[in-house]
Length: 409
View 1: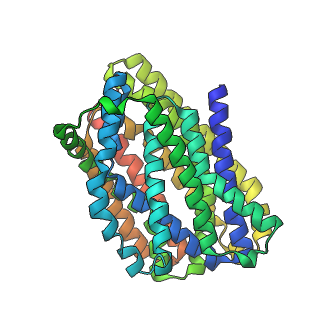
View 2: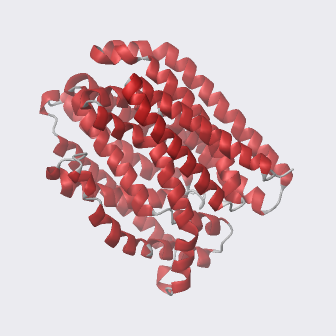
């Protein structure tokens, strides 16, 4: 209970500070500035996924049942395996600047933030199966919340909102992600004896062999999750992108709560019950995940009805005209979080190809709906597209688990 409370507090601090910062941008710097900021953050998020190539999936599976000596070997090989990816992928990301998603003048800041964010996210992913969830969330808070707190306090107490520059955001972001990197690296170096590990080529190939299907599935996932921003950028205005981003960030509060309090706490045990073929534990954990996901979802919907009108009143302007977007997105996120349960059941049975096919099909569906929806209904069409996409994702994963009888009984 204490661990859950600490994780919740850390996530709330990170989430709350980011939300306050986005709120301040939306209210004082304007929707267009918020739209540009949102596109930068989304581009970083997608680039982190591409750089990671989902190599962590293999590491996570192996770490859960490995000895300390083997854990050292797994972790070291995972990070060395990123070097070829950096050499290939970092130059290709020039497309972000060619398409004007991020201005050329911020290219050096983009790459610095990206590298620190990627390594920090991999630290987080490894710490979860190591059962260091609190420390993982401390690093998460430093990477995701601390810089937003500094900037919000500075702007609120010492400077006018008109003084806000993109460089200010990125430099403070880099400093905080750098601090998280140093703390994370110090933990792993002190905890594991990497000097005794000999590099093994077959180990590297095993990472790539497992990861490529998950990587394709994850890219498809992120198309489902983030393509909405790019469609708005291409077919609408940055002002509308800012309006949509405000509602998207607000509805994503649910995802952060559920991932922190439910998924990260229970998925290692769910996987272990599958590996051990423990039907009783599997059923109990699966039921607990369902109940907690639905409980948090209901709370988020009720909170939206109660709190959203006050937030919109403070924001004013064009934000108040699109309030129904929040409820479309929050219900879509309920589908998304329920699909996590089936996702880890499928992962536990190593049905990698099935996950990839489901993700690719769903990505195709949502891209088609995005293209048609934004031209017919504007940002409402984009929100409805996400609703349909997440529902299809949930339905396909559930049907696979039932059809292949992957649930232990």
